[in-house]
Amino acid sequence: MNALTSLSMTAIPPEDEALRHEVRAFLTDAMARIPAHVRAKSWSGYDGDFSRELGRRGWLGITLPTEYGGGGRSAFARYVLVEEFLNFGAPVGSHWIADRQSGPLILKYGTEAQKRFYLPPLCRGESFFCIGMSEPNAGSDLASVRTRAERTPEGWTLNGQKIWTTNAHHCNYMIALVRTSGTSENRHQGLSQLIVDMRLPGVTVRPIADLSGDSHFCEVFFDNVALAPDALIGGEGKGWEQVTAELAFERSGPERLFSSIVLFDEWRAFVKTEAGRTPGAIRLAGQIISRLAPLRAMSLAVTEKVAQGGSPIVEAALTKDLGTEVEQFIPAAIADDLYTREAGTVPLELLRTLDYVTQVAPSFSLRGGTRDILRGMIARGLGLR
Image 1 (spheres, rainbow, N blue to C red):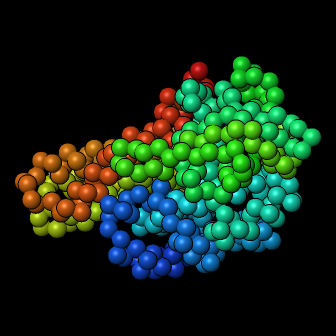
Image 2 (image 1 turned 45 degrees about the horizontal axis):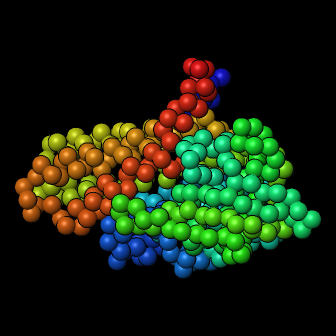
Image 3 (image 1 turned 30 degrees about the horizontal axis):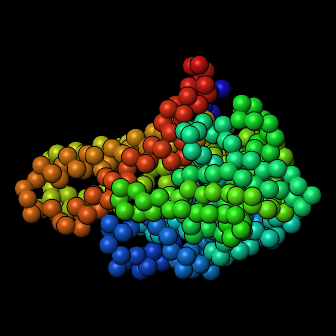
C-alpha cells in the first residue's frame, strides 16, 4: 500500500468541531484592531503574552495528558485551534514549535521526570522550544549533521552550529539533533536528540534578517556547552528514527496550507466589493479554493493517522509539498490580478499585505524540508525509485 492509497476521507468529530465557535469568538475580538499585513505573519509572529493567554484558556498542549497540564483532547481538537489561529492571523510563533512537536516528542520519548518538568510550563505558555536540525554546509541533508555531543562524567559537552532555527533568540529550550558517535559519513547511525537550555554558558544566538525585514530565523553556536546526563531524550543513537517521526507533525498541519490565507481573505474581501469584482478575479478565487479544499482533506487524513499513533512520514511530505505550491501560487496570482488594475483602486492595506507575503513566500518551499528532498521521499514512498 502506497502513501496515496493509505489515506482516507476524514471528518472532524463533532465534539472537536464544537470548539471552533468559542475560539472564533475570542479571536474575533482579540484580532479586530490588528492590520492584515501584521496578521499575515501569524505563525512566525512572536507574542509571549498572547501565548500565555491561550495557555490560560487551556488551548496549548490540548492533546497532552491532563496529568502533565494538557487538555487530554484529540489531535482534531488541536487541528480546529490551529486552523482558526491561522485564519485569523493570530501571533502564535512563540509557542508554535513547543505545542506542535516538542511536547508530543517529549511525551513519546521522554522519561517521566522529563515529562513532569517540561510539559506543564509548555501547556501554560511559559516555556518555548525551537528545533535544532539544519546546519551550515549541509543543505537539506539532515543526516550529515556534524554538531557533536561527547559524554563526560558530568553528562555531555556540546559543540557545533545550527542555522535557520526559528525564534531561537526567544526560546527557553532547543531539541537538537546531534552526533553522539561516529562521523557524518555514518549517515543515520550515531545520531541522538538532546534538550538544550538556551540560557547555558557557551550558547550564542544570532538572528538572521530576511528580505521582509523580520529576524525570526537564527543561527546558534555551541561552544563547550555543558549538559546534564538527562539532556538526552529518547535512546542514544535513535535520533534519526525520532526526528523523522517528529517531522510528520511539522509537515502536515494547516500551517502547510494557510501561510498565505490572510492575504487571500483580504483580497477576497476586496473582490466582493463593486470596485474589486471582475470576472477574472472571481475565476481566480474559485481556482484557489478548489485547490485548498482537497489539500485540507489530505491534511485531515494525515491528522487521523497521527491520532491513531502512526507516523505518516511520506503522506506528510506529500501534503507539505502540494500545500507549498498553493501557498506560493496565492501571492503570485493575486499580484497578477492587482497590478493589472488602475492605479489607486486597490486598498493600501491589501497591497502592504501582498508585499509582505510576496517577500516571505520563497521560504515556504525551504522550511520543513526543501521541495527536492520531499519529492525524493514521495517517490520512494510511491515505489517510483
